[in-house]
Image 1 (cartoon, rainbow, N blue to C red):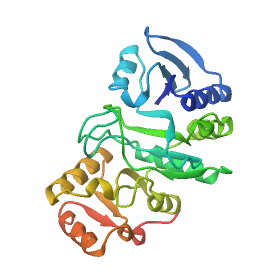
Image 2: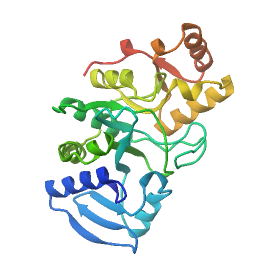
Image 3: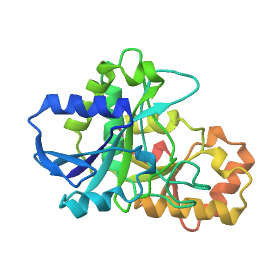
Length: 273
């Protein structure tokens, strides 16, 4: 059971929703005076007027309307200065300050299996000019439910691309879970090609992903706090480090300070898909 959030302030989000509506016979089940609800089988689309990254506790509003769900999927645009056509998925929360919704130094629980399967499904499609990738954990809103964002990027021409919206609608519609182990990813930049490569090749799901820039300037206690929060919100003790994105002495030190509480894994520990 899923709650699918559409932001009426986001053209890409609306396009994905409308493509979903074309795939199946969705029934309008009412509104709560602000948000509108449509249902198909176990899925409910909740269309909200505002921008989703600031829709704090939106899952509680859905529950108050009577919607039952296991996880939340936000349909969204993705904005980047590069304007590279990209389809992305990512977990949400803030390792440090909450500059774009959510709560400072708090992470939302991940829907790691569904999110990683969505990445795999996107990667298998003929996406043409679009790249597919994880993004690391960033921005709000705050929710109490397992959540991920699925996005069309990276500028207005792409947000209005109906073919991209149709692709993500198919990914959402056909998405399933798996029982693969979940790992926290550490290292790299905002995009996470290494974690994407691993997810597309091995039986592992990624939950929260911590980029190098979130760790910069942090002492050991802060690093352990970030990893602990990421592991708890991902439901795991496994950590996958992108070692080649770090200086070797730092990677060694990081392994040492995490070693007593977490299990660091590599591709050698994983079963191929």
